[in-house]
Length: 123
Length: 411
Image (cartoon, rainbow over the protein chains, first blue to last red):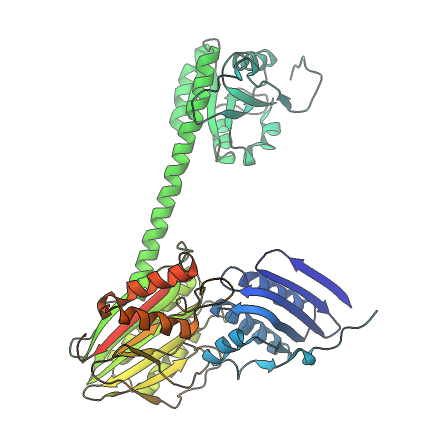
């Protein structure tokens, strides 16, 4: 297992735990016009490094605008092209609301709680 | 090169004009970076000495060949003092390379007494000034350097201004395509449209709207292409015109949006582009309208100071998973009421302190307040955006498009 952390912006913090065939990407902050490109590269990198199953921990995302939704959609498409999947874990009500408005709550695989996160391998 | 100085490296002479440090000259150019490209050691020392006697604070980097100069030129932003006769290059060819490589620098050419015509040609070719060796004193040299840098800055500003103007004109063209004159001549609906670009003005968004009355039915859309930039805006224009063409061409209402989705898929530059869209259709004489919702926030109905969100099933944005015709839903749109269609830039505004956002509830709250103040429908959009900006603590991040449609005249 590898641990990579990127902190480049006060508004969005992204870290990733990569395993053989899946990766857990933890996002913290607000995903908007400015920070969405950062998340885009993080998700693309995770997929490029071989993750089929991309698990995005949304439990600490305060806000996600349409640009952020667009990034999630494109990552999901890329994952599915490789017979993989993108899962959103524990989105907050504010983020869940935009998923519902955009009719995407039925499109994304959404896990309601962080219990769905795979256990981190303990050292 | 012949050097009295044993140091072969480019020379950073500490000529700070220290004699005049106390009396800083009242000019925009306080201290000047100079790249002296001169193979003659004596001439180079002369330049340093002349500058040392002036009020100009200069940091001189001295190189003796074009090859050496190339290491400095691309990032250099001060003034290049250039001798047109170097061991490895000369004349106009040399000048042209310096001018194109050091785009942000001012260039002053040094010529010999008998080559003054070269100096004149150099200025014609783009150098800011020329100086004739042996006819220069310290104050003339300092003034030439200062003026050259000021002139270069003015040129640079003018260039940036021209670029900004081109950009603005391009954006205006796109905006005209995105936000057209609606076609509502025989419609029971009267309209008021509004658009305000977001904080990132340089990047036009893909918000669009349109309204067309055709064969006794008034169709209205508002939409938003995901992302920001010319590609997205151009796709927005294509979609808006395609929609109008489909409606005016008499394509059955149920078939318009599936066809539009096919057009989106065939026209988009990248597979990841999609569009949110809301379409409402009202038959003349009816007080119920049909709605189709694709990833877009539902419109609001304003009536007697009350504000209600239209209830409709959201479908994914167009271009995500094409699903063909959908079940159409209806909502009450009685005479005397106004329908507000909008893009999400409005509801994404902060509601006071971050991270709370306005959302649809906040929008309703603002609207009730504005209507309660007796504001007319015509003045509503400005008031609404002004209020949203106040809660946001400044201009909204994203573009805002609004289309208000009043049934049976404005009240």
